[in-house]
Length: 636
Image 1 (spheres, rainbow, N blue to C red):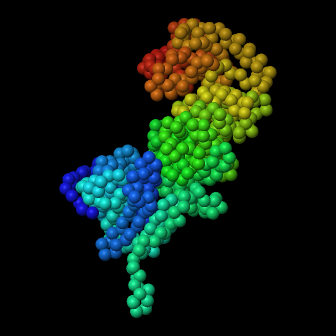
Image 2 (image 1 turned 45 degrees about the vertical axis):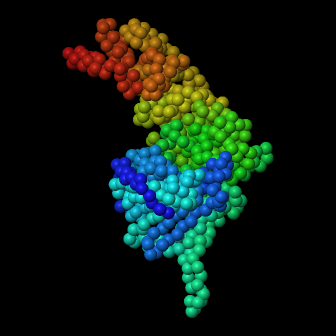
Image 3 (image 1 turned 90 degrees about the vertical axis):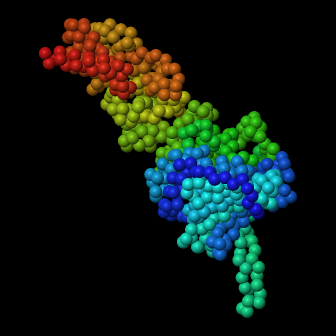
């Protein structure tokens, strides 16, 4: 290999400099992870070459045997990882090794700097495994040539992990990539072949191509007459893990394979390995991660499974086999039915794809249901990481709406604080005799929901109400109207109808109270005019003087907020003011003869109810002026 002219020096982005500084100067609990990352990258390069060679066999350049070689040089104190995969062009080198912005650099650096104890776990989470080389090396050299390019189109990249890196042209006969780590002081154990062997077999035994380790020459005879030459020896099984029988695979192997395909440094929560034979033949190995990726809430970010056809790698992030609300699932799908020259267009319009998608979706939902049943604590960890995304399911997947609904968890008036631990099945088990609906309330915060005046009658009767305070909850409930034939009913919409929960004496007392409140209701209607849709007496309040409710067919206040937050034009909604006819404040209003003074009190009641429901007012200054005016009247 000869380095030629056209050598350039580039500066790292500021975020990359911070990242490398933190990686170099932080303490890592498991530094040997770097080797797994580099071997995984080499394996990916081999997979990509296999796929591209389906259309252009010349890319193999006469050598279709794909391997990874690892060699330590004790004299030079270097560790080299080499592959004969797809390789990189000059532009790809600069893009892939000089930029991490596509992997969310700023967020990564922020997270890394805020929690030094978890820094090694974050490397894989942000897709920057290559840079883990600087954990053990004070200088890294990369030499590469893309498959199909001429020998003079090789590239050499080098950096000390500080302020810049260099890129130069290189004469390189072989395709693929070679990474040379110039080891730091104190990393001598990485020059020992037995140590390297143990790391490779521990983390990379499942790699589907051979990983060969250089064995130093040694003397076999006592008189050193018999000298064995150095050679490369394969140290991994080189068998795709998903093709092996489940009974032959240990839990540790499943966990390490997950870390390989996901570049995650934490163990998965659960996994499912299934071989399907019949109308469609395929193997699915699906994982539920232990934590959410940084870009999980970006629905446009790439997600999906690694797709293989007859063990030939086709693509990363094949999103066609998993619905968007399950975008956190990682895994491998290997089909015998899809054509080898499969394209995204074929995947989007293929009966086999649809069948596999339905089966994989069902498999994941069943796995989550089993996790919830067998290990409530582990499921709560899952819910804390992915619950918000799972709430997208009922709207997105009508066929599995009820199955997804059974996996949802909520806070409730019968739960512990704001912990989301209540499932719909457990709610139904606790329903009062005669209760026909599942009641819920949506609000801006848990405190606002838990202390809403709309809950007063439900608390009095001991009826459980689900407390929903996430932005997505209103949208979720608009697509989840029933569960197991039980209607889900908002306590803030429409007229209150407790059905059999209200006894005859209560109904009679309420009717008499509403009749007595008729005059003041009419005066309030006149005073408020078109600011409200209606004014009426209610039985839902026991302590508060008033509340606002949404008409049955109008969007709720939370839905209006959601529409505005996403930039949609929200309709103008007028609310119904409900008053507690037995409240002292309302009974005193009946005695006011001054209509102008009654108007101020009517507006005050409405503003109070809007504050309790919406957390804010359109005209706070008018509210303050009105309060001050009434205070002065009271003092005089």
